[in-house]
Length: 171
Image 1 (tube, rainbow, N blue to C red):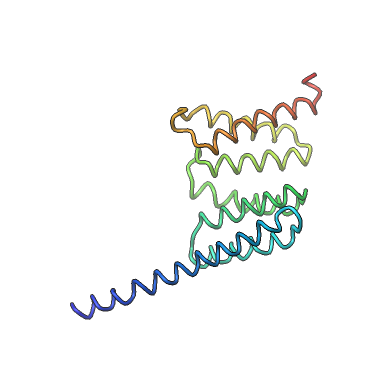
Image 2: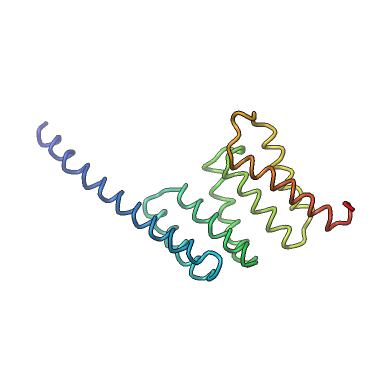
């Protein structure tokens, strides 16, 4: 009994130290990626890829998803549609299995899909994504709406207005 207790007492600090090392490393990589976000997309992609590798190592889907969303944001800003499409395919497999349909991540995925389709001039699919965010938001009471969902809903209306304008339906 004492040996087991001693084993666990010694093991817990080691596990906590390893966890702290990962958190510290992730924080450092995130700072570096944010520094390059708007100016050097390849550097930002590099740091977000390193974050994804750490997330895989520690088997943490939420860090993996956040890293992919950030990398997709970089790709969107720099109009890198190939990278955007690749990231969206990965997110399509990760987000639904780890989140409910009305989660912020699911709606954030819809936002990036809508942005992606808009950049491809596929207004129908883009509109469907933004309308889905608005419908998802309507299903949540005002008290339970997160700031993210409120922001995504507002942005969705703006994108729908832009789509209608581009289609010549809004003068």
